[in-house]
Each structure stands twice: as structure tokens, then as C-alpha cells.
Amino acid sequence: MGAPPSGGLARLLSRPDFKRLLVGQTASGFGDWMATVGLLALVHERTGSSTAVGGVLVLRLAPAAFAGPLAAKLVGRFDNRQTMLVADAFRAVIVALLPLWDVIAWIYAAAFLLELGGLVFLPARDAAVPRLTEGRDLELANGLILGTSYGTIPLGAAGFAAVAAFTGNLAIVFWIDAVTFGVSFAAIARITALQRRPRQLDEGDVDADAEGATSFRAAWRVPLVRAIVPVAVGVALGLGALFSVGVVYVREVLDASNATFAGLVALFGVGAAAGLGLLHTTGGASVGRVRWLVASQGLVIAAMSQAPGVALTLVGALLFGGTAAAGLAAAMSVLQERLVDRELFLAFTAFHVVIRAGLAVAALAAGVAADLLDAVEWPLVGRLEGARVVLLGAGLMVAATSLGSRSLAGLATGDPPADPGFGPLG
Image (cartoon, rainbow, N blue to C red; front, top):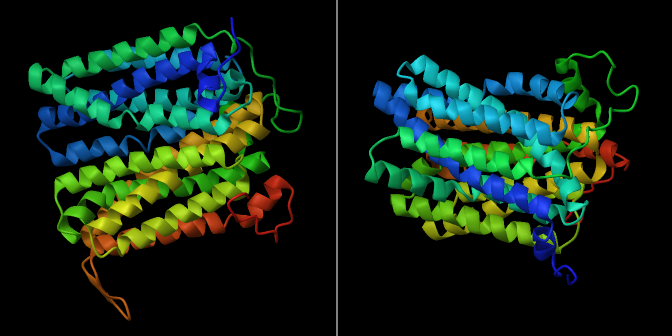
């Protein structure tokens, strides 16, 4: 056989185990988004209530309280591969049974369990990436994995629309999702590089007899986790606010069409791809770079909120997608480069639990605030609609979250707290 092809992407795709993970995640990502749209439609079909449909979003909050201790407990008993296999099998069964239940409480319970399973799966997946790539091209690898989660949104929505149009049977949507979990299970089952139990944390990091909840809390004893996770939450705050208020902002403030909103979402994806490419070609990730990217994301949101027309808003969407995706990928890469095995798994447990909770809280809070706020008259600025005020506040909060973590970043990197560490290269 010849030498492996050159180039980061070709090098990653030449690694069979990483490619298996990528294929499995692409399939399950497609199924997840089909089922997400299908779940909203199913709840509406069963109840006819908009409030009941909104309750599905709340279910993204509650699992975070349980997933951290559960995932931390699993890591002491299973390797990353086993954890992912158990989570995939569990979710396949739950999603296959979901459309068979007529009682809304059981449908909610199934949605809760699916989210719980996902929050157990994700830390194991992300902690496995450095071993599948031998620690190379981590920013690009994380970008590809994130692409399987978010790049499949339009594909999943289109798949749901096709099934609904041609069959009218919502159950098929969930059964397709179950099959995609099976595809992911089969792909991960063939991965051989992960068949090793993670090492225990060094003595003093975690008590030997600690329960699962204590092990989850142990993640916060790692300085790097305390530096990265609060900053990465800024990405979730920005995403939650923009997606919650975005359609109102486009339709009611800019007086644009649904097609414009669809274009805005599409530009998020284009910007995300560009941001990930730029991150990969301009050097490695660092705590300072994560903070710079997240602060930039917040400033982009704040600027978008004051855009006078559609054109500048679409430019802002492009920049937002780039800074948000690059910020998440850089944060993940920093954890992967500096932590190993059980520390890394616990770090990603905290990372995903807090980000999911932050995303849901931001979406709910921004939506409620936009509904309650009337136009505000500000000195020098003039009249600002409620949606503009909410987005402006969210953007400034994201930037403040990043800038406020400066001392923690110094603690994690060993730099003096006074060192700004705030620039493109961190």
C-alpha cells in the first residue's frame, strides 16, 4: 500500500476508526434531527396544544441534573466504546417505542430519556477523538464531529418533510431514527482503538470511594475545566438567544420573509465551515483563543441586533456561525490536548451538561423576554424593539462571560492572572 494521502482532511479520513465514528455520527445526527422535528409534530398531534409543544424544550433542561453523575459513574465501569454502545442501544429502543404511546406523559418521559442518553453518549464520543486521531488535527476532527451534529439539521428536516408528505405516518420518522442509532452502534462496534479502560485520576483528584455525583463534581477540581467550560457556555448563550429570537427579529423587526430567515440559518452553516477551516489553518487551540472567539461571537450578536437592514444581518449571521463553531471546536481541542482518559471524560461530561443547560435556559429566557418587552426609548440610540434589546443584552452578556474568565484562564495555563492572553493566537 502507498503512503497515506497528505493534508489534514485526507489524513483523518485515512484512519479507519475515526472514519467509522464519523459515519455513525452522520447517520445518527440525521435521524436525531428527523426525530426532533417529528417529536414536536407528534406532541401537537396528540394534544393540539402549543404549550405542550413548548414543554418539549423544557425537557432539555432536566436531564442535565442527572446526566453528569450518571456519566461519571459509567466511566469507572466502562471504556468509551462500551459507553457509546450502551447509549446507542438504549436510545434505539426508546425512540422505536415512542410513537406507540398515546399518553403525553409517556411521550415526555421518552423524550427525557433520549436526552439523558445523548448526554451520556457525547462525553464518551468527544473523549475518544484524540485516541482515534493519535492527537493530530484535533481542531479539524472536532469540526467534522460538530458537523455531524449540526450540519445534518437541514437534512433531518427535509427527511421529516418527505416522510410526512409521502406517508403521513409520524411513527416512521422515529423508526428511521432507531435504525440510524443501529448504524451508529454497528460502526462503533467495529472500532478497536478504544477497547481499553481509562486510567483512574491521580490520587487526590477523586476519592477512591466517591459516588457518581462526587466524581462528576471532581471535574470542577481540574483548573482547565474551570477555565474552559464557563467560557464555552457563552457559545450556548449566544446560540440559544439567537435561535429563539431570530425568527421574531427577522419577521417583525426587519419585516423580512421566512425565506430570509432560512437564508440566515444557511449562512450560519457557511460561516461555521469557514470558521473551522480558518481555525485549522491558523494554528492550534489555546485558552486565550477560545476566549477571543467567544467574545467575538458576543460582539457579533450585539452588532447584529442593531443592523439597519437585511444585508448587514446576513453578514452578521456569517460571522456568528464562524465564531460560534470555531469557539466550540477550539474549546474541545484544548481539553483533548491537555487532559487524558478519565479526566478527559469527566471534563467533557461537565462541558456537554452545562452547554445543553445553558442553551435551553438562554432560549427560554430570550423568548420570554422578547414577548414581554415592548419597544424601549434609549438616550442617543432612540427606539429599540424588544427583540433588538434582547439580542443586544445577550451579545454583551456573552462577551462579558468570556472576558470575566481571564483569571481562570491564567490559572489553567500557568500564566499570571494579569496576562491578558486575549488575541488570535492566545
